[in-house]
Image 1 (tube, protein in one colour):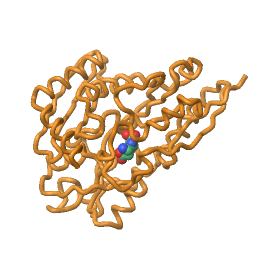
Image 2 (cartoon, helix red, strand yellow):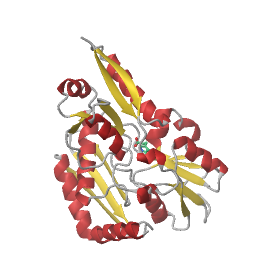
Image 3 (cartoon, rainbow, N blue to C red):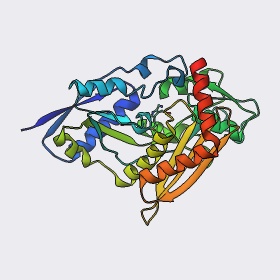
Image 4 (cartoon, rainbow, N blue to C red):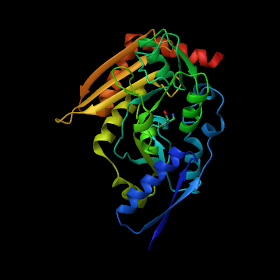
Length: 312
Ligand SMILES: NCc1[nH]cc(CCC(=O)O)c1CC(=O)O
């Protein structure tokens, strides 16, 4: 018996490309499954004209898709890990985290100048508080302007509107096949710490669907799963969501030790709380680094950002 698996996907080029990639990898296994994509429109796709963090709530891109899984309209979904809230959804599981691609942010300027070379007063477009904050820490003389839309739209706006540069996730560009042509500079994590889970995918399905979980487990990448788990434990503990400047990045060394660096900052980039930690257990080090950062004074900054968002 061949089972047909229905994957829910947002309509964007990136979401469809990621979903098709997963289907391709699953087909390579040569097991008795067929695959079908069902398009789903999410709130994050409909609201294009305001700062993402303002329309807010967690998991703007994920909620409708999870509902469709509960309703059995679809069997599974391919998420960008960085869009998946750090608290888990009842009845659903992240069955696999495939190998991460480039986690860095990509800086694209019209003049070809790097972030540190841009003339004073230049306008940098981003929809991310995390990117804006970290740019301002290094270059308080630049101006951040909000830019929204999917990758294609943002690239077009950068050329046609009043932006000197924009910052996008390298992973998104890589997946749609454009990285080489357009990136001015890949921002080192030292300069701009990526979002939690950036560059990684998460394959989600119903908890009770053991057959599908077993299939998806073939695509799990242990290195990625462990490092992303540490980043997400940090995020869960600071209760960040996507509404505050928060970043984290983890790697594994040869001894299988996780190296995690995490950051909380103020929106203007003037206050930065950053810590690194090394350890074995992802949950433990993620929680520990979060507690250290909160003790440093990040708690006040987080509360302030949340308060500002509510008043605006
Ligand atoms: N917030 C939107 C989003 N979610 C995932 C990616 C692509 C990169 C990834 O998989 O981490 C992007 C675009 C971007 O941030 O430029």
